[in-house]
Length: 113
Image (tube, rainbow, N blue to C red; front, side):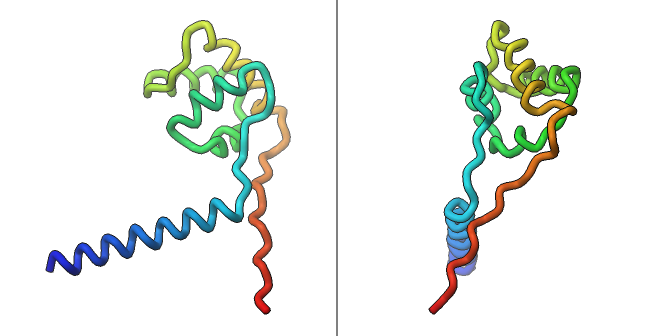
């Protein structure tokens, strides 16, 4: 019985690893836009999730303030001196007045010969 569980677990791990590898090869890795707080936002935000989560947001400054404060409570490393500049960076790049997020398209499959 334990062999079967082991084989199933290994199979699941292998398949999920292959899916992640294929996805990583076909979809460009998004990055946050250039700006004075890009590195801080990258460090603070992508410690726990992909940059794409941030890229998709369209929030007001008040909403970004609540979001940053919530993430700091959950462990995001944002020093007090960086709090306002980070909120300004996020509001400027991912505010309600910004165009909707456009997801990157995966690479076209290579035709088989």
